[in-house]
Length: 392
View: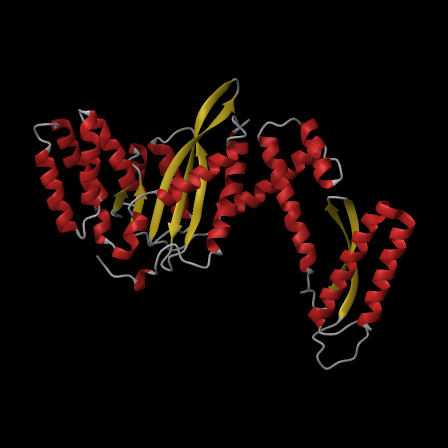
């Protein structure tokens, strides 16, 4: 029976090619897609059409029409149905993912300021059909609920949370302003990382950071044992207000960079950097404190401003010594979110200037969703499980 069905499909394809030549490729694809979905249904049911077998897992229930847009035009397909209504062909799902990717591409072109005429020309080449300005608007509008749902999804327990912000150029009326893009990344007890949220605000003032953190808290973020970030004054105040009592690790990489501003002579910079790294690489907190005191004393006369700065700031980078040794290499800096910011910049720099906040947030969310989904499917953990790690 199956052999006969495949022969019928091949005969139909050959007939189309003979009659239509290359003009018949659209119909050929339609035949192939319908045949692939029908075979998928047979595998799902464990039996071919009209076949009597004890292995049957259910029964067919006709077909449902659906239009699928492809690179060679729109296909009117027959989607196989089953009585239990649980079957859905994966071959069609792959087409839907491609359609979603196309939608994202169009959204990117749209927010990048590409003219409607250029968008239409590009998509006509890519997909074989023209997309008008109204279609572009509709597709971008359809993406917004999907992105909003992701940004507002319920969160859970995360042991470590990284926070950072970067800036994008956004047009407001006749002015172009720098808008802060906030990002939060969490690592759970299982050592898996995930993008927790993002938002676009006018600045990194306390009021904006506080709103961002409160939204994370309202969505269920709890169990945080450590925040990792750079020394943003607005963030520091907001963090203490929303999550009081939770320890903070200041990014060691940025601390080393900040220290250089207090070094009076160029020839001293390399040694100062080495001394700070030696403190950070100490085996435990006791040794780190000893080396810090020694460094403060060493530079009291030759670089008094540096000495005072070291005493006031370096301790903020030593919080990691209260956490599992196997985790320290990952929680000593904001590298994970810095790399994320570089990926955002790589994708948004073509835009140069976003037409509004919504456009900026739409594209940033799309990028972060993709990255976070990739992280959650990684085979290896970002860091060892908390219970598997040795305490410091």
